[in-house]
Length: 620
Image (cartoon, rainbow, N blue to C red):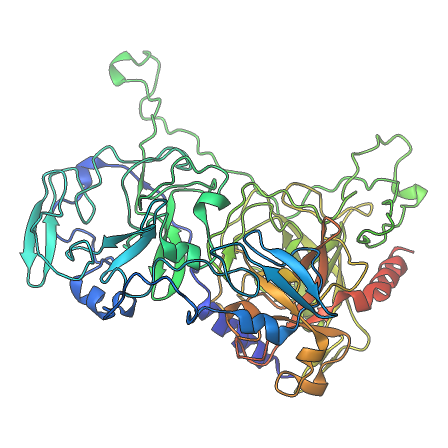
């Protein structure tokens, strides 16, 4: 198969992926330099009246009433579950919102849904925010009848956000003057105040990472207006701030920027067309005390012009290796198996060495710092949530050029990484980076390790229709059998011990950026996909006879970004026996996001003996 199709897929996915993440320099708070004239956003985006009128999301729908019946809802996904014919298992319970699962024959099940939920899996609730209900405004959910409220886009007026009124009443706060500008308006802010409505005061800044920030900034760094945290659009697109974030102290029925998940600075959700996105906010960092002794009380022998010593974070390109423990990992019957850990020879450990702490004694157990859910179909991964994720990077052979990300991979042992066979580049230097989330930022948690050997499956074969036996092992360079060092951010995924049921929801992760396609996210993203039955995936309208038992499909037959979200070679992981197992490797697909053309993955269960034999042979 021509890999250009795959790269094109990743390119197209990147265009669809919500919110390519950008690293921004923190701006420091300086009230003396805050703009106070009209339109002081310096060319950034803002919700002008003409933009609101052109936005189909705010289209006026005649007859948008209070009927909550959503039987004709275009988001009804019952047919997806029926097409994919998931197995009739009720363990785990596929029914959402406390629905009760009842087996119906060999391959069917039925969910008894509590009111007011409906759907194959009780996934649909009352639709209080139907299209057009709030006119030129955002619909937010409330806990009291009528369970919704319209937040009008200025200068449209409540309650239905249909009628327009310029400067009456005055939308500008803190004494700001509203100035009419044709069919629009600007706010002339008093000195020290800023924001479209002069709502950000002179003392509005954040400290540290901004987790304690309770200010009034409600725009992103690019000028997008923040969504209310209780916006139905956020919940509709798969994120739930009030249930997802560990610390919800700062969240509420407002659209002020917050940092509820321990990110580097305050952020918020915003809407781009019909996509949910997020970005860091246009908020300033409080000035830090300089600890400079005033000139008039400097010691006589002090030199006020002497420069201070610069400080920087030391970085290393490779982890410090520690001796490998002598005991191999215990295996437990009925639980996912870990790739074999050969015991070192007596010459590997000095006689007078102190026994080091054991590493990678368990697999498939992540320790994310916070439970975060931001973007449906492309979630920003919090630190430690996917600790087995690998960035495979290459550069020209024996050169000093910087490494560039080309594929994903998954750590299964301290010195072993699984990836796709087509990711192998034998004539280039290769390294893996573990424990990091951003491709464009060196992080203190990451470990960069050279690739010592690439072992591609002997029967790897590429045709115009498919890629067969698309699997490879990377042996990493280390000392005394230790390469990667275990931490909260670097752990191994388990190998599976059995086939998983069709219809099960699993997860893929990756950056979506390759050497040939630079339009993916610089931050690690993940997405949920559904395992699709082999019989269904082999039907003529899907992939037909090109699919064999070394591959499987996952995604959604409806199509969409999440069916081609991950990097080639990256992990498809599932939960099995209370552990995360590497069930598939991102391999290939027919274009990207096409209906009936889900992503195809290398089936790891088929290669368990191959994996173990290669690791044992290299260790003997």
